Length: 204
Length: 204
Image (cartoon, each protein chain N blue to C red):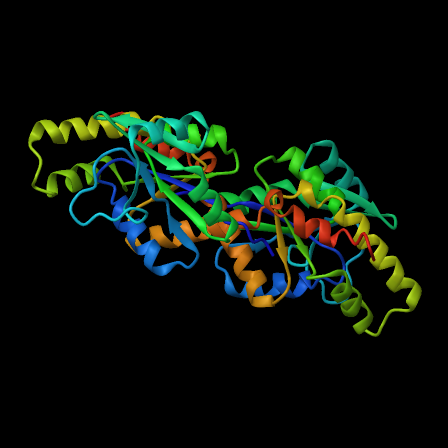
């Protein structure tokens, strides 16, 4: 009935298990494409242009910003990173849902520019569980752990600007929740003007 | 995570197969309760108070309207019919999704009064299919058939006031679509202030 894909933006504090959820989603759900970012940083060993990133010169990247060809972009550690509009639009037109994993600020910028984008916030079941997950990695010193927990608190202040909240309690449930959101969003009357027009029985 | 049930309003033209969809939904989905209407008409053979209807005198019914105890009501063929608020609220508080099958006018009245209600419009796959389904019943004369098709056209003009549109192409798909809508609605941040508060880490 409805053929254009959705622009889906996923955020969530570090340690929530977002990466694992999105990995399973990618494997188990058809018509999902993960956005490929453009960047000015040099390719690392094994990275392929158009797969891992679209590699750009600084001039090329700035020209894309000027021409409003970026869905969102940031400058991080002297390198530009951004989401090329062309890639997103082409995927959507092919009927694929395009998933972007971005920070809160980027997500809210996208929502302003694309009000019909779908913002999903993934949260841990509790603060204690988040602490366990971050500590459990065993790779971070106490200061870094404390910084991440503070960062999580800041990010969570913006959760009511998101459309949906998914609790990553069990991986399976979280993936099912996201799938239900994608299906329901496609059934919104606001996304189905074509079918409604068709059913208006104008020529009946 | 979220325990209160939803108020779900279903409409759709006669001949869409709404009844069959809702019947299968009732069998296959937990935590769904169908609203029981109040009426001033006399009970028919076998009808049980509180199961088929809440049977009321005209005075009782009018008093309920006065006291704002009806979600919506109509007077049809000199009998009152309405949805008692108390029944709906109790079901929701028990965590059940309450389903109401009402006409377009009633549905829009409910949405005004309960902005967080979920309005779903069920449509046939095409006008031709609707005609086939209505004609196929074999019980209606050409005039009645033509009236129903005209009525369908009128109702469809209001579809964009609904939140979702479900095409009853196959019964199974239609029921799955409604289930996805119910799941996604429960994941909306606007319905999850409690979990968000909990995650605000105030006491962390």
